[in-house]
Length: 381
Image 1 (cartoon, rainbow, N blue to C red):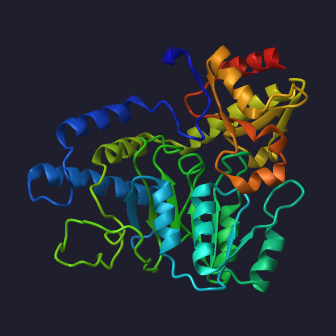
Image 2: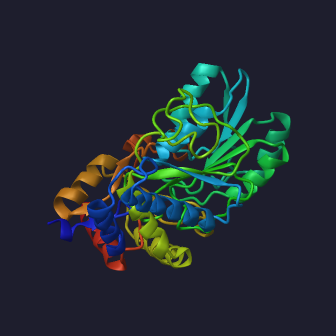
Image 3: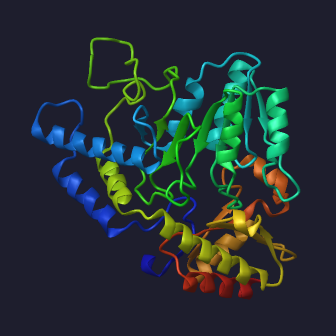
């Protein structure tokens, strides 16, 4: 039964959502699921107001200046493509990314590299697999980047990246700065200072639904168009609007998902989420360290939250096989494999296991969930 599943894949999608999110989506789906920004009738105006309110809340959530704009998209992957492919790249441009990037960034930059012959470099890490800020600053001076892009929290190791320091250093040389906050916004306090584009996912640490993401445009940069189409305004002009956010929002808005995101923002408590996930993370690591044969891939405790990757040494079991056993025999849902993050697996050297078993904790998990996982692993090893 679904109700009996121990769900530990919150790094992919937080689940479940709160009742307020479900109720808001159901209400809007029944009463206001119309095209927004395109009609002068009452229902369209009410639906548009929901979007405007959600955008205002997002700007306030990250202390963005009044000049910043929110662009809503169907997902953070689409948002990152709009940003990264929209930059005016020139042959020989340099970009730095962290070795913890998701394929929403890594594959997009690989495409850009093939198209424009840019140079993509990984940020250096120290022996503890933390970003080496001193060396990074030296590298920025020697080989000035046009763009610096990194994630807030690794979706493989749970490492909390020092994004504030990274972007402060990047802005010293006027680089374009981009944050992938998929695993951090709503879990870690964040402001838009020194960030040109802050991309977010509604369905992860913000605890909203699938189907809505976007980015906060805190720049003076006009991106080239990547996705074009109807905007409901100036329809006889075949060119997209010039100004943000209208330039980047084509097609019908997912008003139902946006209503769910708005409801999630109304109730989210970052401090409470952080405290609970931190406590659960520490408890999980402590329990796993007691199990013979568990190989953990975790950073320094102070810089770690929410995500724990591991393998079982000497068992002959791949990560996928462990995940299958946990699912079929114990009804425990974890994620296995390479987690759409190609660079970090080279660093942690887990290919002999075909990736890792990843536990993604969330605010609805309990210590009992962790106990169930560890009891199951004791039987497997």
